[in-house]
Length: 140
Image: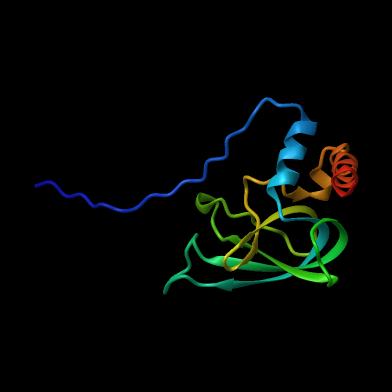
């Protein structure tokens, strides 16, 4: 007797390139609606079903340190991501500071593993400098 089941399988796939850092940052900047630095204050989860799932949406409350790109009028914003890495969800740590690249989606501002979002402490030292230069040129 043969037994098998069919289930949906999802996987996150971010295509890396061998471009110079400046090109990667320019691309991430241009693909983002919002680029900010800030501290993660808390999180809340919107369940997509009865059980905890990697497709659940986690909303992070962020106290902004710097607005690099975007029209933001508040010192506190919310950024969303999926719970699981198989949905490319980015998992933030509470009380840590991040550089966040975010894009608008139907349910709000999102980020994921395929953006350049990262802890400030793990950034390439040139990234913030390059971002500010790109932002300056963008405003000219």
